[in-house]
Amino acid sequence: MSRKTMLAALGALLLTGAQAVTITQDYAIAVPDPVAKDIPEFLGKAAAELAHDIREATGLELKVVPAKDVRPDGKYIYIGEGFAAKAGLVPKDRPLVGMDNVVAEKGGSVYLFGHDRTRFSDDRKPGWWRYCLLASGKAVCNFMEKELGIVFLMPGREGRDVPKRKELTVADGLFRRENASQIAAVAYEGEMMFD
Image 1 (cartoon, rainbow, N blue to C red):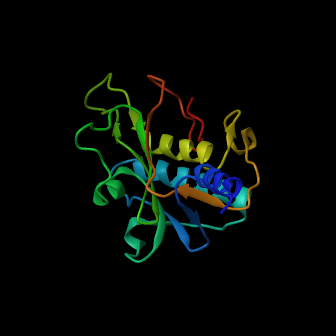
Image 2: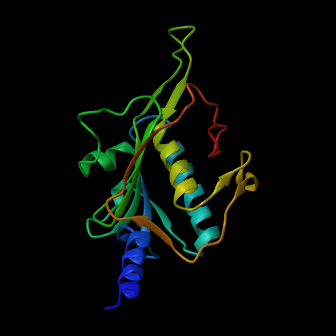
């Protein structure tokens, strides 16, 4: 093998990096079953927006399924902390706080999660305000930005630039943890733009 051929092969190896998982029509998007007020509803809306933008970008039609319909042999993009905990992906040494969110790949499945929690006003306790910290929704946004190349320009589907692509791939073994820079954010109902 000539020196040029060897250098070209090494360069190609370095440029391609790690193996990738390709999302195909066999995948579905899994969301939590209703267990806490508003969390599954919001994450279901996030899943619907993700499915819409994957279809816009790649032409793939991915179904959104509740956790009760997840098959052990299926391929999924999981949304929510519960799925990640079952897969052993929630870090124990550095717990997720605030808007920490993770995009991860394990065993061919993709996990989009954060520490989701809610608190609502109580008529018996005047002055309590409802709040939702839905970091899994932010993980969906990060996936849309980094893996799909979507640019959020303003709230709503019309405010997202969704580039066309031949396929959707996720790096094998990916574990990307991020913390959103905002202390507080307003997400209008059903919108995927946080900051």
